[in-house]
Amino acid sequence: MITNDVLIVNDSKLESIILKDLLKKLGMNGIISNEYTILTDLKKIDPAMVVVNYIMEDITGEQLIEEIKIRYPEIVCILASSSDLLKSQFKGFSIDDIVKIPIDQNKLKGIIEKYIINKKNICFHCKKEIQEDFYICPYCGEKLKERA
Image (cartoon, rainbow, N blue to C red; front, top):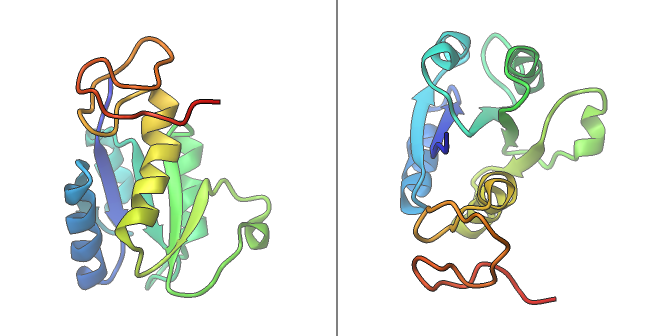
């Protein structure tokens, strides 16, 4: 089943609300969670992606992502930080990508396209699943990708 749910795990309410608003503008459903309830929330919600803050009160983001990936390896897990982090700093961890906060809308759109839309062959504009390899969406007429 195609889902547009994205769980947000951040101990900063302001950052969570900003990210939720950006996700909404991109047609995604941001759901705010926290470091204490995320594993329970994942039993009820089947998100396409989880965005986890790097530094939280009782656990670090990479540790929480490892817990998520053990139980739900198919969920895309993004580590978010206000610091400049490199994926190479987290070798051995199951982090799919790292983003710097505050994240701009175009960067977030690129992540959604890379890990959710393109992976499932879904039109970013109309959100309909496309069964074949098209350059233009047969449903809404929007460009899907560049021609080779």
